[in-house]
Image (cartoon, rainbow, N blue to C red; front, side, top):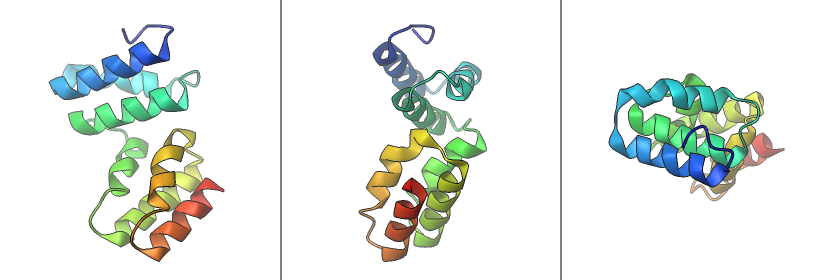
Length: 113
């Protein structure tokens, strides 16, 4: 399913692989994440699966930073994702604009710009 032309099938496969927890899935998921042709939705689903597999590349690990308890880490994650121009992270950065801490909200807004 990861080789499908249908984004919905790739997203479903990535989610299932993340739930299975088998490290053998890390390499093909990283390949999809790094594929320039992958849509933002596919990249986000793959990033979520990689976080569950604890095999995420550094760029994907920044997604976890947006969910950290410490607002400083959330702010830094948003800032770095913005500097990387990580288009796949638009949705999580949009959610960060509703963060309880105003600095995180401002940083997420700047990252999206």
